[in-house]
Length: 383
Image (spheres, rainbow, N blue to C red):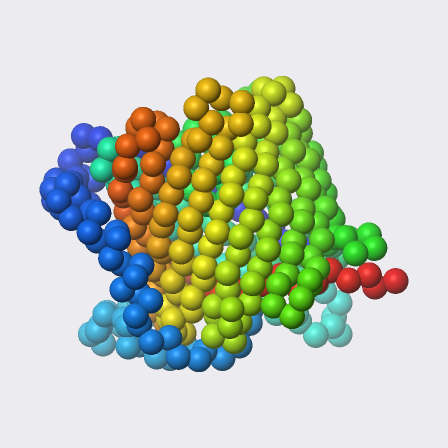
């Protein structure tokens, strides 16, 4: 069981002098006007020329965090301050979660289970040629309770993606929609087995005025169709009192290019339907993950978003390449994502852009591999 606590603030800046100084907006725009297309086109193909080398089989556990080749050199004083901050926050969230977990469920003679609690702080910025500068800051806290019943979980988080459009959900995009803001809490029954299918069920309330109760259920199955291909099919239904009933159907295929080297190809389709709005959204996306090294991951994405019954059906077409770099030990990461999109919002005109994200991840569970991408395990019948 775990408790998820998440706080996110989305800020849209246009005239803020602070943000302009921090991000160097004028410089970015000048560069964008003359160099975006060349950079965006060249980066993905240049990355393919980097020798990858075999990486040990990727699991949920980190292989090493002692290599600092990619981190900025620090003085002894700076090194001490950085690591002490990490230790303080990691110990803080661990002590709090163990206090609750041991008080609720741990027997006196029972061995302690690994605790996966963490604090995650993210600062991100997105800029596009035809759009404005958007920034987003978020703090996420997970309180893990490993000694309680494993299938039941207590959830509390802000800005759930149930209110987001399908493209934002599937691409992990931040949204400035007021409907996506706010916290919700409830209980979850997860990973119950029904033949070859697994299920989860949530019930709770979104904390805003007026209060917004919700229920959500999902069923999914993973099957190996050959030595190299795996398929996953899932069906989700959700109900919010303010939004009505909705459904999300997803079909994904995973191809094992070289799983031991962290090279995986995926292709999938998803469809979302909102019953009260009588609105369909469909998305097709192909992705390629390449684990260049222990500290680097390259992720390509090509996709199209469609609104089937609109006059202009195609909502957006995009091509992106994300470079994810472990900057310092196992808790500081940088993601840089140049992208080219052709959105209906700008009359299908080419709109290059770039997304930059810094993530600090504080946890005593040092074995988590934040760059791991994996093929889901087959759901088997245990009867």
